[in-house]
Amino acid sequence: MALENDPIERSAADIARDVNAGTISASEVVEGTLAHVDAVDARVGAYLTILHDAARERAANVDARVRSGERLPLAGVPLAVKDNMCLTATRTTCGSRILEHWIAPYTATAVARMLEAGCVPIGKTNLDEFAMGSSCENSALGITRNPYDLSRVPGGSSGGSAAAVAAREAAIGLGSDTGGSIREPGAFCNLIGFKPTYGRISRYGLIAFASSLDQIGPLTRTVEDAALAYDAMAGHDPMDATSIDRPVEPAAASLRRDLHGLRIGLVREFDTEKLGPDVDKAYDRAYAELKALGADLVEVSLPTADYGLATYYLIAPAECSSNLSRFDGVRYGLRVDADDVQAMYERTRAAGFGSEVKRRILIGTHALSSGYYDAYYVRAQKARTLIARDFETAFASCDLIACPAASSPAFAFNAKSDPYSMYMMDYYTIPMSLAGLPALSVPCGWVTPAGGVEPMPLGLQLCAPLFAEPLLLGAAHAYERATMHAVKHLPLVVSGARA
Amino acid sequence: MSSDTIDVRYVAKLARIALTDEEVDKFGAQLGDLLAHVNALAELDTSLVPATAQVVESRNVERDDVVIPGLDREVVLSQAPQRQGAFFRVPRIIAE
Image (tube, rainbow over all chains, first blue to last red; front, side, top):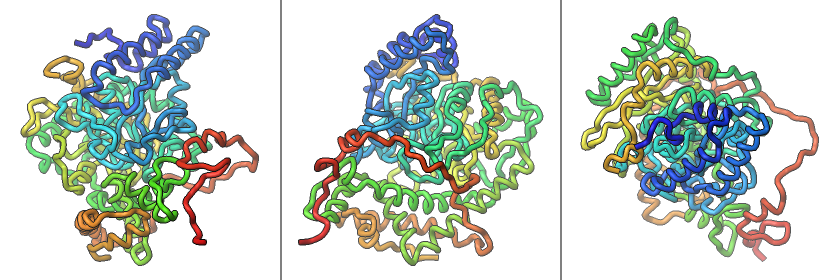
């Protein structure tokens, strides 16, 4: 049973405070975390690579910095890094055979900033191959289980980072979100899953999937920790031409106690009745909780949001087909030899990519090919404009939008064999991604799914206008503190029950 | 809008992915199904709508033309599937 003073149970904010105060060392925190990882990760499968030596070395370095008088916002905080982000001299696989043995020659800016802020990398976490999926089942390198019910998926694609933080194998997990890949696993694993505004956090060193949508963000057990991680990572980076060059308002200073004076929009088109009576009731309760905290609930309309999935499944595969053309067996990764270079390309990519990645490359190549470009790709980009305009109109009459973070709670392995049924999981998160908006998932209740025995968490998605991260995190903090849904159940691997 | 069929063999050739016959059948059916879904976009009137490549402000990004250190050549080449001296080695491209 994890105790409240157990370092693995504590928030990043608490760990950093104590390490800075000298009441515990980063090395002690990291040893405790590594011992816990060694005890539980065989069951959870959050990590593809565990960095015992690098973590100890980094922790000693943090302790030296603190002893020399430095105060670090994330001193000694154990960090899980999704394995599509580069960490120098460390294996970075993207959950793919094609990069299974690739050693990154440099460190992603977001990771470097977390390390500079005092974080200690515990390991690299599992993901759907190249971040394409919603369950981690598309990883070629391992199975990750939901710490709240090991027969269920952790969500995806950032499922390894989500499972790591939920199972107390790290205090902060880094994920990447292209259409929901932080928010959906956040919801499935009872966490805050936060995707900032597109361009707020540098993508340098994040292996590209769909460049106009990809965004790095944190998975944490508290909103305050998400704000601390955001404050550490956000800001311009000359190494990423799409990173935004404007000042960052710190979010950790904007946490609120209530929602008085805020208008929160409920989306007319997002009817939760179709999600089943239990889930429907849970969201109704969540909206009532927002109102009880002082928010003024207003109805807003996103008439084009229903086309989000269709828009996304043209734009994201088109960008992926272009980005993944670099994996050709020439400069890095897997090569399958052949007599001529053309056959080498084709065999390497056939052996290196899994089915979902191949599907997306094929659909993207089709959508960009001569004769189809205008009908598919350009039309999708125009639909994207309409979706973004819908949000602009909605935000004229509200400050935040509230809606589900996923189409269901965590489902069982192999439950979504048809690709489109898997894509539907991101129905509520994709429109925000297409519009580049900051959005997060915050725990809002528990349901026991049909056929399941364990109560599983649900996530409420909150979405704000571009660059309104402090408002978004501030409101989420008020909701989290008032409702405390997240702490109602402990994950099995931590509580010891039936684990 | 376009039809719901996709010439998987042709597209796979463009994408430089060798497919088995089973994959051609499987992906053909799955991608046809997906195209049927995305064809719903034809219902939207986009005739007067500009395309959006990226939502957040975009501009040309320039920097001073100064030499900055790049990655170490040996570190990068250490990841090559096959190398020859300071070069990546690949199978023959031009026939003899």
